[in-house]
Length: 117
Length: 114
Image (cartoon, rainbow over all chains, first blue to last red; front, side, top):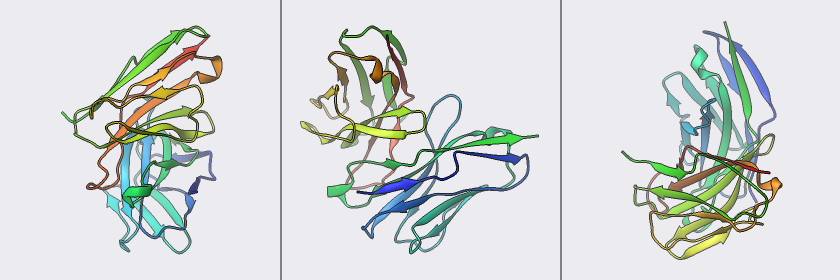
């Protein structure tokens, strides 16, 4: 079974600075997706960024980028120029790309990000 | 607007009183699933459905039931709720054969069982 580990329960960053959230995963599959979801106080689950395992290029979405290391099974999220609105719980998640085994998104336990002035 | 809609958003009930949380999606997704979120545990899958009339257990199915009679709806049923089912519940959906694997989430249902 796949597992996802987020080893940082809480992180703090100053406004305008850069922060990196860590995520490692374990799988025997070669074709899969990785995601970072953001959960603000409103509780809504918002997709931040997505990475397909077959792509070597790291995904970027504006101030958000990932460092995807497939061999090391690592998928960290970098937030540049942090803003107050980035304060939230961040979840790393894994999903198989094979239809037969894509039965769920496996989540890490989350990292709560605090943004200070 | 593409969305997953859950109801109710908030519910306080008592032990043993049957309740249903509804979930509906308008994106023609084959796959639907229920998750519960508890502090320190992340989101854990309760049940999922790969298509109409096809459902299966997730990681924490005890005390829950589901049905998938129509493609757009996937209700979660608590036949006899207990306090350990107090949690934040999310319904989610996605394409299976096409798409990017992304799950689309409802806004969550906060359930308290007294």
